[in-house]
Image 1 (cartoon, rainbow over the protein chains, first blue to last red):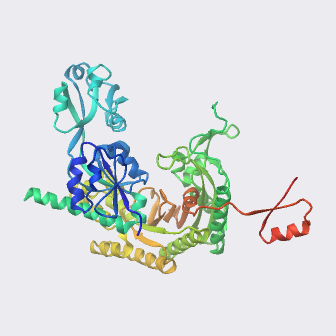
Image 2 (tube, helix red, strand yellow):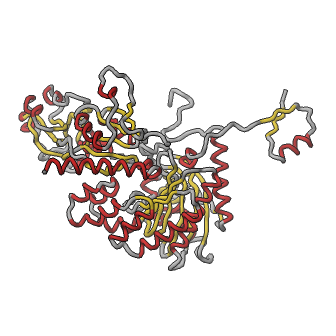
Length: 224
Length: 339
């Protein structure tokens, strides 16, 4: 019997949506996984073939990219930021829909219009996506990397724009920010490490297909 | 310039015992295997003129260190891959030698940039090129190359190898230079390909076909990929017959890094080793058909079992020198005590 596969799961926004999928594929987390007091970093599931590691969303891509975990669940927004060559993205899990957008206070948008600019200061958690996006418009984006409360950037005069995830737009509105343009639409994806897929193909293909079937079933339930 | 006298530039390392020895032995085993398959060794230089090298290996300039040569006006490039150099030798100095030409090489290469997942910038590359493959003998030549590569790895002690057969010319044609389709292929992302519409059907089929070779061939036959699939089947069967312990997969969606390949190709993986051990395939060397493989020795080293330090026998300085010589000739490690 070979070692269990490691599935990296994102803490936070996508965590709740992962639960039904895990149950559908027969890898429901052990009870301790939901216990906030439990300090373990790795958990078993109802399948002896799958172990779980809950990590920060950005770290899911890194764990799977480096082969520490063979499988992972991660937003397309994070994948766009990393662009790891060792990651395959075989299944769109469909949940966690949101968009990565450029936004700013109306005053900044008026004072610093994009047209004619060669340089722009942007607060973001996504410096690579941001630089690439503005480079296509001929604008050099100087990114201020923040790990949370991005909205504070323009509010406190550090930048004229932010690039951040928007799901309903409520946070933006509450902080007086206007969504200027959408960079990309994102949903949660199943990612797989390239060499793991090649050297353990039968086992990993089986789990990819289990995820795919679970998604198909839940989507047909929704449309029914 | 640096505080610690032991600090080395990024991506460079001192290889220490026992690994330096292990790598040297593995390299010599690989090249010895090539020798008994009839491959002659060549040794190209470290530096070349930018124009010379890029004429045979367009990729080298992008990846290589560049130096200004004070003696000959012009730009020199440190080799970042030896394949282009071997092609240059075959097409210039050895152009009148009878074909097919079988050449092998092993040595250091240097890359200007490491990647996040492969930070090493200097490593040892070993490989062979088979240049001047006659028309109709492509499969036969590729079988020889994969057979040689597998024999070399087995002789060096590498286990649990997977050969992933690829069809870069088919993947390239299916992608139609569309950046979204290329991204879909690289990510094996069928959903992304489907977003392009009907034109993406070919790409989706290639992504879906991945797996153990028999199943993959069946799927590809359903979408009628024809002649290339028969070739692939011949090669897969032959590799499996010669090396039953090797797992043979087919991944027709693989495109990354196969910029100059024109036919059936392959990538090698070993269980538990990050990244690939090496790769190879059919390509066009000028107006000649060619094939070959290249192995990255740092990855090969990671695929070898842990090494025990060698057993050394210490003898006193007054031991009979003939006796010492006899034991050394028998392969024992004899250290003479200096005290």
